[in-house]
Image 1 (tube, rainbow, N blue to C red):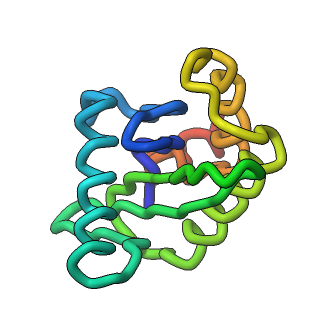
Image 2: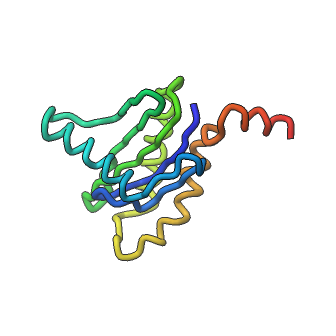
Length: 141
């Protein structure tokens, strides 16, 4: 499994977004809008939350977290396959907890203050940000 993209969104707006591979780069607002629509659909129609959305070649993992001032953020990751879903769910929880500990609330007027959080996401995801061939290459370099 490789994480192709990860981030944090608030109210359908991406506040942190990392593309690990440019070959699947997408529009930030389009991605966040799709994920927000999927979540709203699940709540409205099924009165349930979406944690995983699986497609033929990709899987999307979502994890909601409520900040200290009751704002809700969603941590997400887009993966190319899912051979270890339990692993990514634990990492998403860890990233959400780190965001909660780092930020009391979301300040939409100053989105650049979240830029450093990209490093935390990348560190927590570890080698899952590398494709298998890249992991192998790292071993021999």
